[in-house]
Image (tube, rainbow, N blue to C red):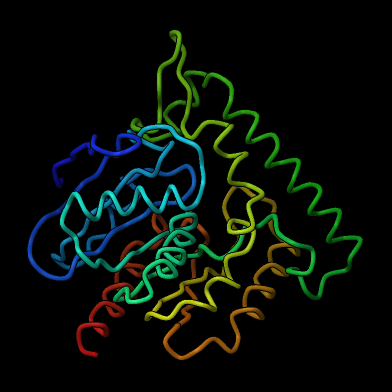
Length: 278
């Protein structure tokens, strides 16, 4: 396991693991509710990889969720580790950050976005081919499920549920155990335009990009017709992207990092090798 360090000369402490080694660096950004351990099963062929806990997650510090400030966190990690100009690979929320990183750094060598395109709780127009009444009913159910999930994150975790979370995602306060991120951070992210729909921003990315989208329903979420319509909307809106943005579909769900780590690693490795050959 790569050694872990905490960057302390920044607005908030940032927990990072750096594999070290030579070669073009790759920076890994986990999804909402995840930690840097999300990448442990991946392996990228001996390349230098660095993974960080995003603010409010894992062992990194708390701070307001403002996208530019989170990108400043990423800048701090890049500077501290001497990564210079990394390829940024992100899953879910991390994929959205990878897109924003590419817009901040147009000369970036490349980004990989693993299903970080839009929230499942998105604009009604992003569910084409579905009866409007049925769509609105399913979206109301989805909102209620997300509301309940967010409320639960603000409560102490019963002992029986603590094993469902990575140990580094648990924090003790007043003798009680809570999961990170906090409910306040979830609320701050949930309705931002960037989280609800990143595809318009993806269209502006100038560097090479790999986008991986799943073909299966997310585990533990309402699926069926709504998610089928959601995937149709994603495919519709990814049509006609410029040739430097490559889209791949993967037989997996949003949890592709745990379900099919070798397949994800193969796609990323192929993309990275293509950057080297170019």
